[in-house]
Amino acid sequence: MARVFMKGCEAMAEAAVRAGCRFFAGYPITPQNEIPEYMSRRLPEVGGHFVQGESEVASVNMVYGAASAGTRAMTSSSSPGIALKSEGISYCAAARIPIVYINVARGGPGVGSIQPAQMDYMQATKASGNGGFEMRVFAPSTVQEAVDFTYRAFDLADADRNPVLILADGVIGTMIEPVELPAQRSEEEVAAIKAGKRSWACIGHSLDEPRAWIQPGNWSTAAMQQCNEDAAALYASWEPEWESKWLDDADVVITAYGISARIAESAAALLRKEGIKVGLVRPITVHPFPFAAYEAIDYGKVKAVLDVEMSIPAQFVKDVETAVKGRCPIETCLCSGGNIMSREAIVDSVRRIMEGK
Amino acid sequence: MELLYKRTKTIQEDKVSGFCPGCMHSTVIKLIGEVLEELDVVSRTACVLGIGCCGLHMDYMAYDNITAPHGRACAVATGIKRTNPDTLVYTYQGDGDFASIGLAESVSAANRGENISVIFINNGIYGMTGGQMAPTTLLGMKASTAPFGRKAEEHGYPMHMCEILDRLEAPAYLVRTSCNNPANVMKTKNAIKKAFQNQLDGKGFSMVEIVTGCPTNWGMDALASLDYIEEKMLKEFPLGVIRDR
Image 1: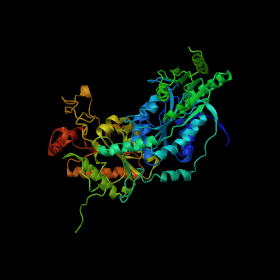
Image 2: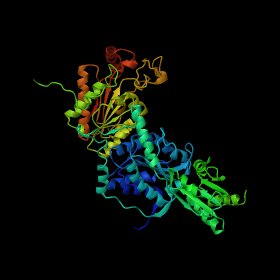
Image 3: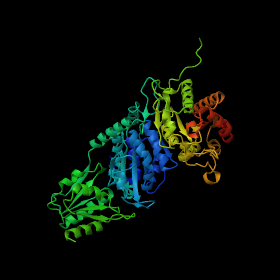
Image 4: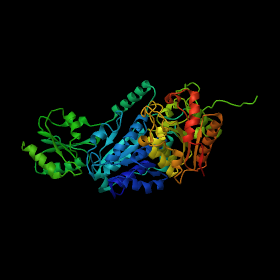
């Protein structure tokens, strides 16, 4: 298929439509406005529905409703707006309703900054709402990955009956890159997917059939515990995904996710040309976290693992510490406030480690 | 012999109601069930339940339902209805849900003219959480968070949702009824039927505000609560059709 130039936000929106998304509700917030704007003109072309909600809270609950009625549905926002969506996300997780949502992350906390950041790591991976639920969380480092993960997310959400989060950032969302778009699902396929959910979809059933009962909770503590045990079994079944490079001879291993990983890879390639042996570990799913990826590091050889992330204080490093288990020092290369990680900063950090500073 | 009355099939036979003595939720739920059967739409109905005592019948209603986060029922209903226009979608919400935490969702759905029906139970108090002040609590009425009674200068005035929504262009039908006597129960049933028929006819947003009692949290017995409705609640919340287009 031919490649096209697309902005990250619009490419993710198109990928969602091609995956069969037929309902989107969202609320304006920078830097993700191109997603609702794209959906507002694209969804009607395929018989779908777009609603500009009165808030992020309302939007995620519209998506909860549409998905509970069997339709593939998505919402998106950026960091402060994602925080507002946490109520609805928790309800979807509790009721086991498949939705997809995208965080085009910006600086925080508070209203923060409108520029790119990775300040929502803990929220995305540990507690996206009350009640200890978990989700698959994908961290794209290219627009192509953002497209591919968004497309896959709908299948995974349906298979799990659980929300899936695409943890992008302001760079991925606003950058224009060549992408290969996935195949558009036919109207017959989209209809078949919806029909496959009829037994539990809240759309009306005759009194001779079991009713649809979408329950984001339970009066019975025994039943509630059973729901949570079932969910825990689902979470335990997930396989983490990651990419590793140049670990065999590495003296320093850089670890990063999302856009930081792409910049880190560029720094590593530059350093390797100079003969400095740098490896790379890049989690693709930041939840479940690929702890096993860090077992391939030769801890007898590496001077340090360098954590690179656009968050101060560092957050991703907490999972890295758990993975490394104290087997080598962990250094950090950080920026925040909407500043984008620079290749030079990473290169300097590696040099300092190599020089023992 | 002519059959004059039978129980609605929309309520499961083997379940027990969780409502207090004198509560009118069970009356309204029965009326809704009868209307759904009379309109022959049970098999294509989805109920969106609010949070609080509104959700107490989820166990025993026999047809499709979903529980919305507190106040978000109109947003959830919007998502269901937009993607499934053949489904009859109604929300069942209390005063805290519809008129306080869900005010933005309620007013916005009404303003969009969503083709949904809202059954709004106004008993002037938070029931399930133990009698806290609601947006519809009467002036002078005591609540567990207004122990000296509601004061206008501190708490503001009771909110009149029918009249508030009547300032909007889009709503099709806004009506206030009660269930404090048999005549009003029948008027409530007719109003619910009209609200649902409006949706089937594609007329847009309809809301039935039903003034009810809460003997438990009002601190009185069931019969006294009927008098309180008549003498106090209906003075503040006069019954009648506010909008019918």
